[in-house]
Picture 1 (cartoon, rainbow, N blue to C red):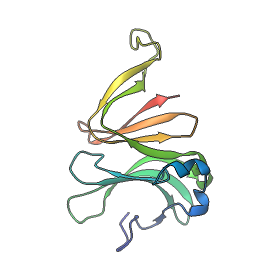
Picture 2: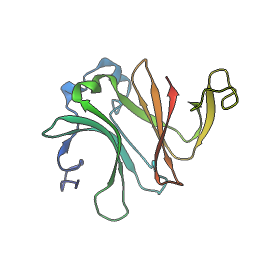
Picture 3: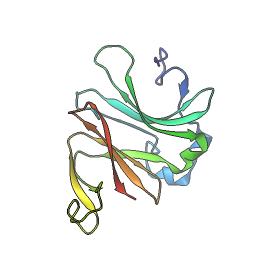
Picture 4: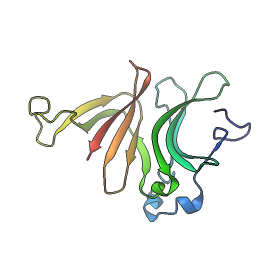
Amino acid sequence: MTRVPGDDVPRGWRRPEADETAQAWRDGSEHRYLQLRADFTGDGLEDEAAFLVETPLVRLVLVLLEARKETSAPTIHLIDDLGEVGLLESAGIDIASPGTHRVMCEKVSKKACPAKDRKRPLEVRTPAIDYFKPESARRLFYWNPATQQLDQVWTSD
């Protein structure tokens, strides 16, 4: 996918339209829980996480557009393929600050996760993506510098 000159999304994609994002719960955020800009990869460049709609298929995805130092198109990391655009009614993203986050343990044994809430600490060194459904489950997407990719953990179930 390449960016259209003068446009801010890759060719073949569009931003969600106002009627697709008119939910009242979005009013609490300047970015309406749709688009984030931060240095998610820790390379000093501003990246973007956003919901985009593929056209003409009308397929909704959440992606990370990783900025590149060159003038080339960003590297696109697929975070989630939601499919139907209507599912955007109950999906949002927000910034999670660097630092220690409490995340769900991958294993349920008491030895692997002794905390009563079945959570463990996770140190995140760059801003991360808090991906959520209002009043439901949340996931944290954070950049893993060792693998040079996004990793995910659940923060609630």
